[in-house]
Image 1 (cartoon, helix red, strand yellow):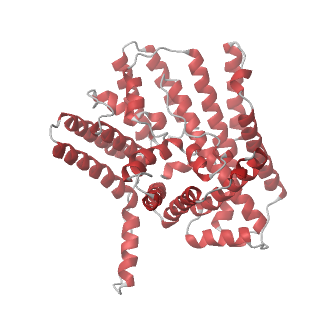
Image 2 (cartoon, rainbow, N blue to C red):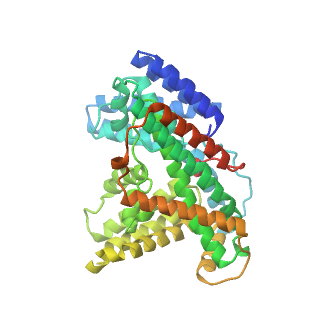
Length: 467
């Protein structure tokens, strides 16, 4: 069920009206759990059982960890939880990847094997809710939080439909206290949520989906297009994936606000980063902080010397790439970013690079490096990725954009750039003034209708649904 479709609006409206009509908080929690199950079952009712099993298993394991008196018993339960969660993720997401690569390895040794891949349906959001339940069990094991005793509360933490499919990745220590807290309808907060949802909707269907009509043909057949068109497609993809994913996050955060919940910020103008390390502090923040806290730091972080620091960076980013997709292009994308982070840390950059006059240069350099990485992230295979890079850096003739498409791309890119500049320079909170609720409501309705008019007929699912 996509956020920008009528079934979602109907489900959300019914859920919100009934939710705020209830006075009993436990009933509200159960109502949201039921709505979340309906939301997920609309896509595939059978795979709801996978999410429910994950929730029930780790809910039980966390309590056993807290009750265990021996260190050995606690470690055994933790490892069991991690193995079960990661095994489910590996089976659904990486089975065919492992089979295909295993077959290739055997072929190298002269063992010719043939066969078809398994028809495994990947549960939507499995990468996201697996990380959430892992962080919960680890936090209980480390004593950061207490194990949750209320099954419905934990089910809502994992199943809450605004963040279930594509994040933001929520941590139990942030979300569970909100579940237990009594909530009251706050129209100002509902208004903030509606504005965020509308902003995310605009990013997704007006910008990201419009740009897809330009990007998809170029990446599908990279050998046919000119260098200039290839550059435009790559830059447009950088904007598309940002607007698509940050649009989802805005809608998720906005929808949660309407139900009295707060989800963490996930993007902070990442393309205005001054270096690659800052980019990862601003891009997919809930993921980058998760891999920092539950992967990079447990590996040793930067505590055991230069070599191990670089090793930990590379392992973290390689696994981050694999998390995004079962393919070697994703693994290389992770390696590429790990290499950039290591170089950023290793090189003693001169102090004059910090001058204000060089800020645009540093923005542009970081953006260029990120765009090169996006080529591997988006390309169907290595051959296509290398073809695009050759055309980007070696002037080549080929197909060009039509005037209409070129104007569309120019307008959209200019709009996104201007919005970033204004967002960086202006504190919009100081410019707000009281507006009567009917006028606010009318403005939002008008904005929603405008989005419907500008929405392309072939708008699709969110990019991060595949992860």
